[in-house]
Image (cartoon, rainbow, N blue to C red):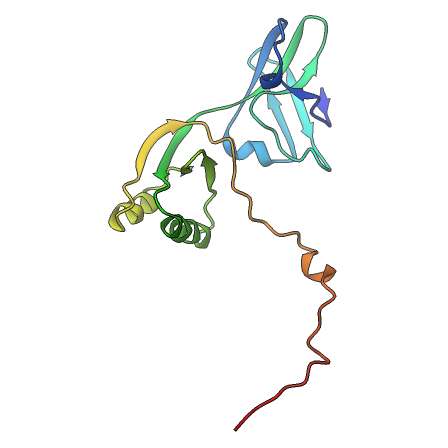
Length: 165
């Protein structure tokens, strides 16, 4: 079965058909092309291009008269930092970004997959991180379109340079 689009999400409606679950890790949700197997053994090839570029918890990938195939993102060990103050969150987010670690947001909490060195850094700097097992569902995406700078029409070529001595 080749899946090229996501029809809808089960979290927005109630469906009484049998559920065949496709369990995936948080990092598999952003892969556009992959081969997976449901809990009932159905082989699925996912090829998402365009606007539907990532899988979300509860997405329905396949439906027939008897069953639906639903995505379920597995819970994993995470580091949780509760947002106390804007400056602290900006500092923590910047440090996490400098280490190129994924960052997720849930209400007023910052979440990231557990990494010992990051946990130790947060503890050492007084952020009181907590370890728990939780789903990582809402990635904080700060990526810029690679063609963003090409779209800008601004140039400094014709701006005079004034140097005062």
